[in-house]
Amino acid sequence: MSERVIIFDTTLRDGEQSPGASMNSAEKLRLAGQLERLGVDVIEAGFPAASEGDFEAVSQIAGRLKRCETAGLARAAKADIDRAWQAVRHAARPRLHTFIATSDIHLQYKLRMDREQVLQAAVEAVRYARSLTDNVEFSAEDGSRSDRDFLCRVFEAAIAAGAATVNLPDTVGYAVPDEFGELVHYIRRHTPNIHRAVLSVHCHNDLGLATANTLAAIRAGARQAEVTINGIGERAGNTSLEEVVMALATRATRLGVGTGIHTEFIYPTSRLVSMITGIMVQPNKAIVGANAFAHEAGIHQDGVLKNPMTYEIMKPESIGLSASQLVLGKHSGRHALRTQLKEMGYDLSDEELNLVFTKFKELADKKKQVMNEDLEAIVTEGILRTADVFVLDYLHATAGTTVLPMASVRMKINGRLTQDAGYGNGPIDAAFNTIAKLTGTSSELMRFSISEVTVRLRENGLVALGKGADPDIITASAKAYINGLNRLEYLKTHPLQEAATV
Image 1 (cartoon, rainbow, N blue to C red):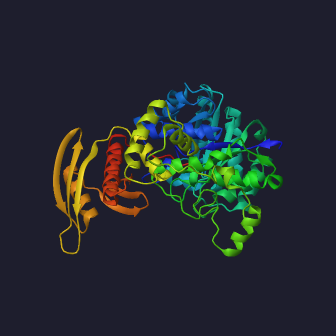
Image 2 (tube, rainbow, N blue to C red):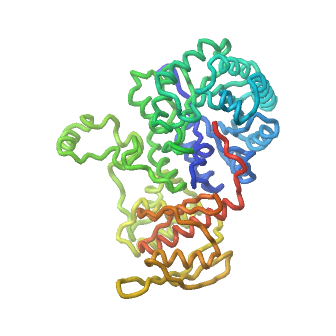
């Protein structure tokens, strides 16, 4: 395959802008390591000027990655660029990514600038970033709704100022594939120095066309795709990494380009993102959904048994779904546990494995078989979580047709034991009410679902997801609620000043 598409993953930046999907530093570090293992070329680690927490996370990731480029996002302003450079400067391969809007609607209503002012701001930002590193990317926000000739002027000026990559975002998911492909063709024909830079695309999924638009752009000559795992992101999300990568791999003879992605790590990475963010993957999601390789119709089952390629255009193993799985129980040892965790995408240190193994044995004494979902919950609680403000110590709930549902709860709050009891419409509601009373919180329960238990909480404009797992559904519910409260506490102390939209 003669040409290669650069995979620019923005799960840690744009993906984190999904409501409630904020991650703490430990979770971001774990995910960044998995993305590097997956083989992405560039990891956009965050928006360092947004908050002190974002700055620290980007800085830590920059110091950890060995192969991937680490990108920090910055508005077209010197202060933002300085902050981003401070965060990524120690990376093995740092990148500065600066942006400004170019569509007339953004110029008039958001920036209150004219075209010449925007052009000058873009040039000054790129030139300043270029004085710090030769790896500079420039994005024209809302590029798909910008005047084509002005867009080409801005790209030409940005490249002349030192941009090594110019990015065409479909910021609001407005484009359709043939139109977007034609826009890429137009830019390549009418930007005189475009050969000196990589042309990138960043598509949103508001009309469900993000992957189609990205593939159309690649066919038209774009050579960097900006994506997220599971397609997460603000509003309807971003282009899905797994969809673009597997389309290019499956239709290689048609599309003629490839990637450096190790596709066997796609599924474990998808599961890790789902576990960290609490955003479940819909069952019929392409590539990584639970039904993606499931066959219920008798004709399909018969065909697959005779030859899998009759109804499967990809092998499950190609994305990391193994046909054979170890059955873990109370007699399983450390080696079997480590092997299973590695297949799931967790490469733990000996110290981390010991912590997980202890929790695993405790759970195995209660359950005959420990499932992957249980292991994910153990890793979350034992390894990924930072120090929690609220910790469940004891829970007892009563319910039935002849008694008033009640819950007695004992918790550690900042290390101090406290307990109380309360009532509710059922045992879970009673547990939640008592926990809210003990913690003095006033969050609104927006969602409650049972798989593991997942809750969504909202308080003072902040939204957080909580997850909990336990053989007892009421205890799991309490853990999920407390996890959500802890995430809200994290957001209160790590506020995002402004989300960046590209």
